[in-house]
Length: 133
Image 1: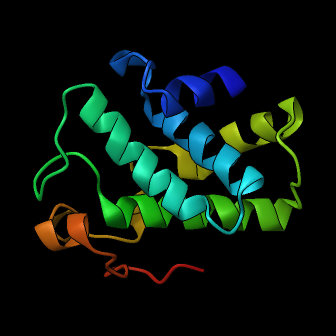
Image 2: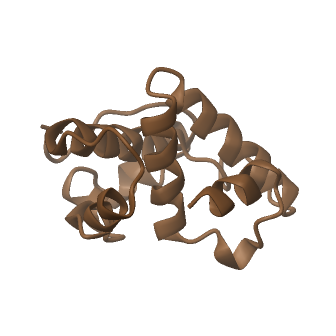
């Protein structure tokens, strides 16, 4: 896990390793290591990493504010409920078994139309289907 974080932070993680699951592992690590500034570290890290691999953070591609905040809050809620206080193999295994890791999970809360909007990419937008608990 530390190797993933190091390569993410120094922008040496190959693009093909920047997977859906590795996004979650990165956010999990930051939420435990830096609970208060986690979101800013996650936000800036994703933007910097996207640029390092030739991507652009625009109103149609790259960093997505609503998705990032939704999943960071989801991970933080998991950590609180499961009373996770450290990055261990066991806590990582438990995280990787959570239903919120499925790619379509967010669509329980958001319509595809809203989530793919420019406004949702650039700003936090509350769910339009079901409230987050």
